[in-house]
Length: 182
Image (cartoon, rainbow, N blue to C red):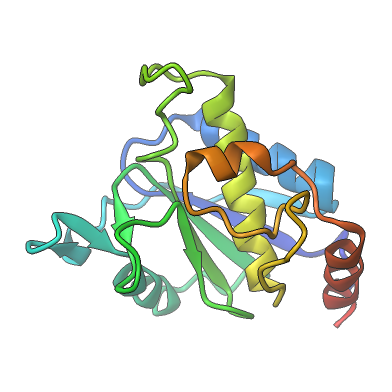
């Protein structure tokens, strides 16, 4: 199967504006030459809500996705508007199982603008695309990159996320292309 026949599914959870999914899909096509398909929306993952943290457990959501019947896709990206976490961090923008089939993108913290406002802006859409491409990189077994000018560089906050570009370094690009051939 070559990269032109691999399809990435995008599934919104809850009330996600269609434009967000389309921007993520467009960036996957533009930067990675992978086709995408919109999956009908799923309900917000109330089952993953953690009463102590007042956030949603990303691992629980991913396990639930893994048990779903979404076998028609090479990889699947879930898009949520809830605050997600993994046990070692207070929050994450996205989460993926290294080399797995499913990833998450949380829009919850991406809305804050550099001026402190929370109105949706072009910065928000770019952040959503960056997180989706980064998590997709993990699904294709790319690890965090030392190069601060690479999309696979770890972003611990919005300032970090805003500083990284919307593309992989030459090494991560080569690793990604190699992963597509497998």
